[in-house]
Image (cartoon, rainbow, N blue to C red):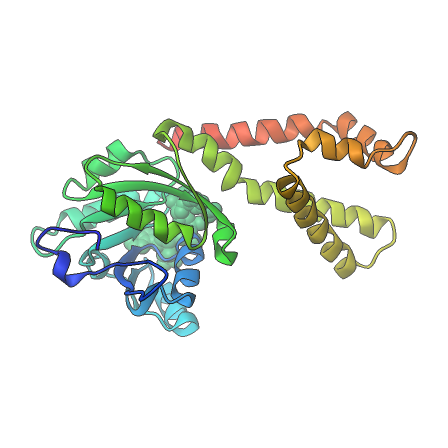
Length: 287
Ligand SMILES: NC(=O)c1ccc[n+]([C@@H]2O[C@H](COP(=O)([O-])OP(=O)(O)OC[C@H]3O[C@@H](n4cnc5c(N)ncnc54)[C@H](OP(=O)(O)O)[C@@H]3O)[C@@H](O)[C@H]2O)c1
């Protein structure tokens, strides 16, 4: 259980491996990020499909989600707000509208725990907007969809040890969880949440190169993905420094050094460094 107060009877939330009793969770903004988190948890039986109360902005989205995932999705934020735990996953620009709608509700049950995935929205701001909730700031990434995600967590004031453990377990089901001081979350987001887009660009460009060199498109794409995945696995499993791996595949006057010369001339390293830095700065700006 994550609560020990008077609301606890309505929501047992043991996410342990045995005897899962899936929690009642509200989701405000069941868009791409929330789906990347929630759908694998539903598949794993850790969130009960029947007890998920999801909210989106438009009836068209709600209908699409009801049909595609057989979920109870509405456009009334109160539907989600009455759950003991709420995952907040609207765009940062949509936060004020949500807070205004919920702030107008004077009575009734409220979530004990609010987990926000909004880029750049600080714990202090969440606490100001939702004073009755304990707040957690989470930075998950899209590979959570295939349970290969990364999530950074920072705790707001008053989040109990039990609640922390519950949140850790929740995100651990879709990948690795790291706890960081809140100021580091912008850099974490830049690398791990924006990073998949940067890596996808590299995968696409490498496949383009292979097509230019004569391979069919589908084969080129498959090989590009496998090369990225295999390289990441090798770096991790052998605990290699990237420079070591580069040197392992670079023979004198060979093919790889010919390609590396081009990458250095084009400034690939500098472009990637600046891309991560720009994403971190944008995250700070959003705050
Ligand atoms: N994508 C990532 O990798 C990533 C990583 C970390 C954090 N995040 C954060 O995740 C959040 C969501 O990003 P996303 O890419 O999932 O965006 P998204 O796909 O556009 O999803 C936003 C969702 O919020 C709903 N919404 C908008 N206004 C609402 C309101 N007033 N009440 C209820 N629901 C409302 C939208 O409904 P409609 O469909 O009807 O418009 C949509 O379902 C952002 O704050 C972002 O910073 C994303």
